[in-house]
Length: 242
Length: 255
Image (cartoon, rainbow over all chains, first blue to last red; front, side, top):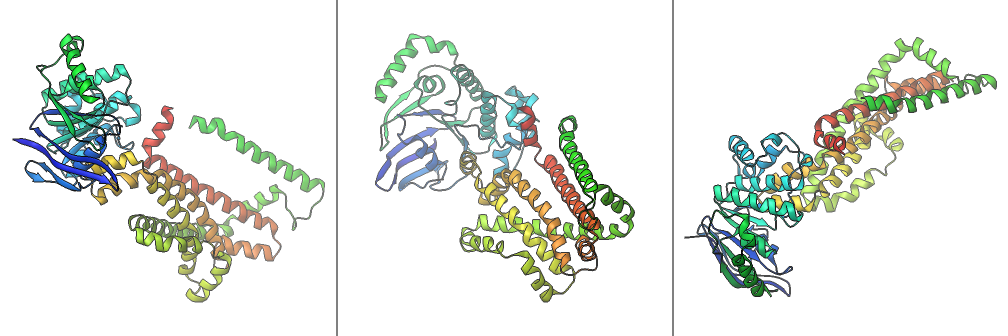
């Protein structure tokens, strides 16, 4: 049964059509990446699912409920860590839960421990490196009670080495704590390495032009990044994108 | 604390130097005491007249604190209302600026006519000079909340109230404290002005009496007292700021 369904969603700003009959769905505990040229309206998709924007037509459903224009149904991790500087790491991680009403500090501490951040629970965000802040942001999203996590190019601001570290870390965190994930990226390798399925967007007005089911078995290891099979898939997605 | 000692001696030294020059100039050129007394005379007067002066000082401190408290409260409430209700902001913000263009010196006697010589007109004067810097600073702080943090909060489903209390208000705290610092020093000035117009005691009364009887040394005692009081208020706010906005102080140390 589909967890998140985006059905015939259109969205435009005046004469500027951004999404045109956008259609896709995600199964429970599936990791799906959306990949598209820059300026193809990826953020608009998220803002629409997040309820900041209302679709002009079409429906967005989470667990069979129509959520057009309603906020609070997804948990979110933005491009920048967006941690509140006056809160300790522990309080930051709890923010997503706090907004929905109930806090679980014990569970939060456990997650910080699993993520290797237990020593920083009482620290403030400015004391952490960029990669560590993104880990905190991901744990905040993971702890939030909503069914679907949306990640908006979370590693695009990091350097290459940190980025690979973070991808491996995210993969292991997700494989041990499965959730439904919608992941936006413009990096083909990242999409292949992390996801179960990849949706390719067209130029504006955006619609899904191709869909790939990633064949690599889980748990995945970074060694697949160098396999011929991986490069072959990279080529395929690349040509679908152009 | 060490840094304070390390750097703190400089202004103190400059101040001492100024006093020494003042003392020498007055003595060498035989300036009359009613025109300009030398610092040593002022300090002697402050020391000997302490018993007479102290109730005035206390009264002014009290009025300043009351006025400051009311001013802070009104300043913050006005800022929050104007920020959260755009309709109010559009209609009242210009009036807010106009309220600062009314000269206090002119307004104060009117307030005495309307409300008598009690506490109320004095509190109104202090509030009028205090609330404005706080309102402006708080409004600026609210507005400067980074859009990416706001976007995150919106996407995570924060209500309008949560957005304000969990993000915009704490974000504005450093700005609000800038406003508080200005208001704290203004509050002493406001108190003295309000006392000029009619009060039983206070530095303002002491000052008026001293200047009309050409006790210039006492006028200077009053001036120094006002300066000292303002400085203490200011330091008090700085201390509270360090305690409340700890995360930012930490940030400065980290750099």
